[in-house]
Length: 195
Image (cartoon, rainbow, N blue to C red; front, side, top):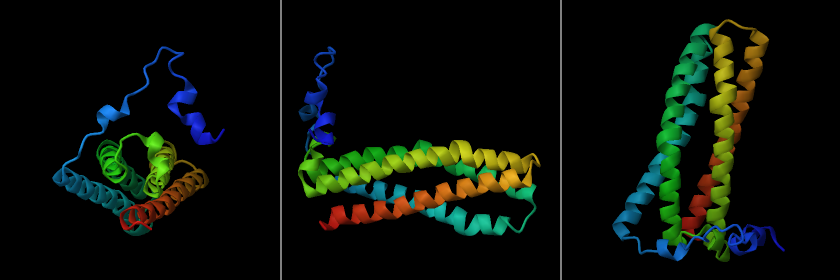
């Protein structure tokens, strides 16, 4: 039995648990071309804002702030990080999910992710979806643990060694997300270009 079959609704046998198996066919409606185009535009803009924002913070704000004192660095990074995190978690990531599923439906003919692996395009969409889950996990670690801990230590004048450790951890989390973001671009391009 393959790992995909284990995830299949029938293998999980939800009927034994008295749970209804979702009728994905009810969700398979024709998406108007204009809605698909708007969805693609929102998807691309959302990704550009997230990816560009991370590059701007890492490539512009952090290098400029390294010339400032540690407390100023900590306060500005904390404010910038909180604002960007708020936008990311409550606007951009939800936009990725909604538009991603709409776009996947147009490309595969179904909202049901359990059958996407039947086509090459669907496999790329699943790969992209898995990358998105990894990005969510790394972002959560960065935004809710490593980043806040580093800025708190810097703001409160804690140990320079401890602050450096958490800044390095947060930096690596950001780099990892950057790499996964590149793979998302490659997967998205492959989906559209049929590579």
